[in-house]
Image 1 (cartoon, rainbow, N blue to C red):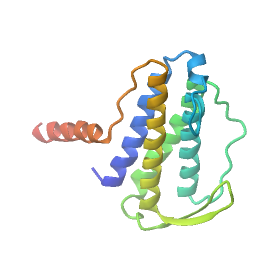
Image 2: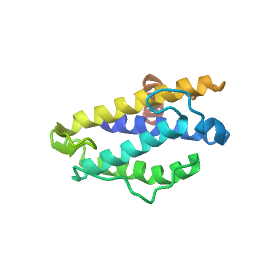
Image 3: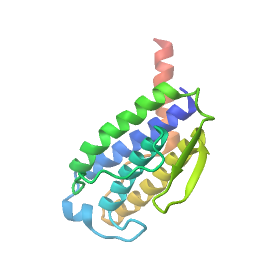
Length: 171
């Protein structure tokens, strides 16, 4: 499996696992402010959704994208309904462009107005690192609420994929 495609797949699968767990949480727990840069599960998961959308737009050549005003993101189900097609679009995008465009420059402007240019492979690393960072915050919040968090470890993702690839080779 291509390195960068596997990182994208890991990031999407980890986000999906977290969302699946959060579907079972009572709404008050989902919205409870616990501290951190995004103080609730709802605000943190919504930030991950928004970041994926912004990066998809940047990869597609839109350097300054605005979040759609019509998004309703009050529940896990509403977030999931918006996020799944975005994740599908990210997977589709990278199934077409990788590995040929890894050295391509991605120009973008942040919400603060700062303009940057990074190579595509650098932005992929950033998005995966960013997702891991905020999923770590979610893991902490889940524990603070008295629940057991889902596992989203990268080495376990690789181990699982290695077993699948080995069983396919043996077949």
